[in-house]
Image (cartoon, rainbow, N blue to C red; front, side, top):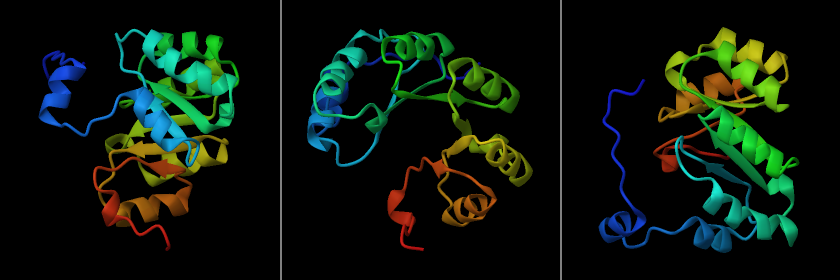
Length: 168
């Protein structure tokens, strides 16, 4: 359970603090298939707006492999997987590799995103050997990311992408 209080801020409040903040619809329009997109749906959030932004793209020019939906909420992933069976889903997990694996198997996915605090090289190797595409969040240390990539880490989420040299 999170120690932070449940704070809800609507888009208007966020945009007043950060005027260049985009809606999901605007971000997808801007990206326009130039890269894969990971869309995280937060627990307790209505999936309707996210599904409404995804559906026309899947029906038009986007490939279902262009979009990855992730969530900590298994039921959200299950509902979206039923609605879009060919879109990739990623199980977000705070600490339990066992629970992440169980949920991934139930959804028929190999994508897992875990909190880096609970990862170690042996676990990463085992997940990779089992065929999982394990990503870690939030890694802000490029050396750690490189070390874990050698063990089989598939990807990472960072607050500082400029620290990472993607050419090496």
